[in-house]
Length: 626
Ligand SMILES: Cc1ncc(C[n+]2csc(CCOP(=O)(O)OP(=O)(O)O)c2C)c(N)n1
Ligand SMILES: [Mg+2]
Image 1 (cartoon, rainbow, N blue to C red):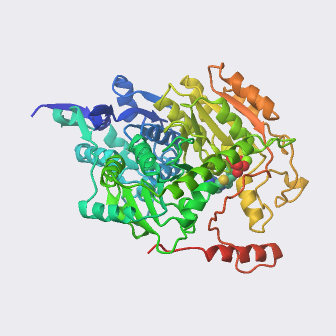
Image 2: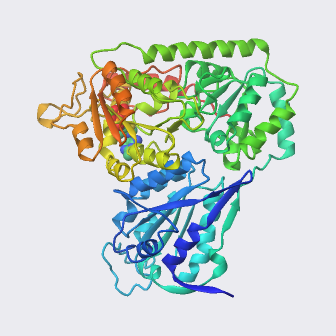
Image 3: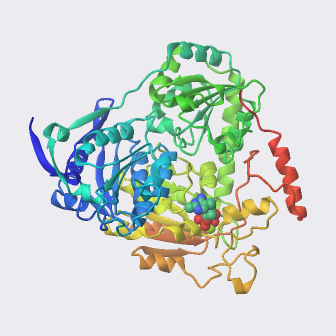
């Protein structure tokens, strides 16, 4: 057997460089590079291996370990999970900084490979700098806290153990059902230990990604149920986009007239002006989608995991006896809501349904009603895009300006705050990859880091990162990375002086926006949330801080200036930040939807008691879907 004597770290780098996936006859290199922040736990192991062979795996420097995992996840999402990036860290805080990123990736079902250093496998120098000591257990380190948020986890205690572990890691990363964060924890002594690795371990390897079809009995049942449906509705989730099923969905619904509501991850399944596109569904849904959902007799979920936002906390579908047919690559999701489970690939399964239902379409009346509601919704979007609100603009006008001044293939990126809901309702998506909102974990701080991953994954598109002041303050530092890598982002910093989304939620539940507004303690209680300020009520200037991080900054105080700024930004070739103040109290309405957020059962406050009564009325509308 031919062997190659390498350190474990060198072997891992060589292995990762030759992994590929293949779908529809097209091969994709799977690990396109490696982000890293070095410390004593990886600089002389993985760091040495990357430095020795830069031709194998491009190294990228980041500012924060959590951010680099978000960048890898944004990259993987943009590439429909057919490629990702690895992330290497030191032991201790460098490693645990990745925890939020790992959870976000796993919850969103996005592959990321995490390679933290770990304490000595030999244990001789214990306790090393940053080691967690556990008196009752010798084999624990801080990396063990990743186990619940990883889909595969291993610690490489001997160099030869890398062989099975690396293969398992790749199997899970490339598997459309199991994918998520994968961790190989690398004890710092083992990284530098040599072994005679078999040459075959380093040969080019291709992991096929198939398009499995659902079981035929379930399929026949589904066809029979859909055939007799009078008001069917498709709920399109992220799986439609990852499976590249948008074209087949388009032709299926054009022919049959089945209307489509989209989840956050599924937004872009149809272009906004498609006759069957009802837009967003659920707690942040459109009036059109939510009204159709309320009466739907058969719900066809495609590639959705039915989060509470999608089901409006199980109040969205109200028809007695509503049935579910779920197409999903994951049996776990396919079976939700007692559905007829079509466990399989979205694209292949929609094509099969199209054939199985070749002589069927919805009744003409239903089709017309849906198309009319769609057109009415479009007018509502136009109204909200051009409200003429003042003196500070409404957030919906900012979204309108960015939408109207961006090109169809450009990508909007967001994750937390009040913008994901407003974008879900209002963003006019024109391309299947044009809408990128991380709303599985809704991680404040994802926006700029994730946007960087999107830009890395497709540098031919402009990336518009929509970030609130709160998210910006959590993680703005990857602006530096975008400048360093010459990857231009257009960051729209929507400054409403605090946590407006949670402030609104708090006010609607009788608690007056407690703790959600920026305010100096000496100027009043932190519980007080009233009155707009243009500018930050604290002696703080976020635009200036962005400038300090290397971005070009343009300030705007109203919609006209914002539009000028967005036009000016197009001719700037480095990352720029368009800083705009908005009215924190001017929100987009809810369209007959509900979200289950518990309210205190007893309180001294009249407002809380009222909110509780209203909450209980909402709870009455919950269904079990058995
Ligand atoms: C890391 C993290 N911490 C807390 C939350 C809960 N949370 C959701 S939105 C929000 C406020 C976001 O503020 P900002 O970015 O300014 O957006 P706005 O709500 O003002 O639109 C908070 C604290 C979260 N989603 N993520
Ligand atoms: Mg804010």
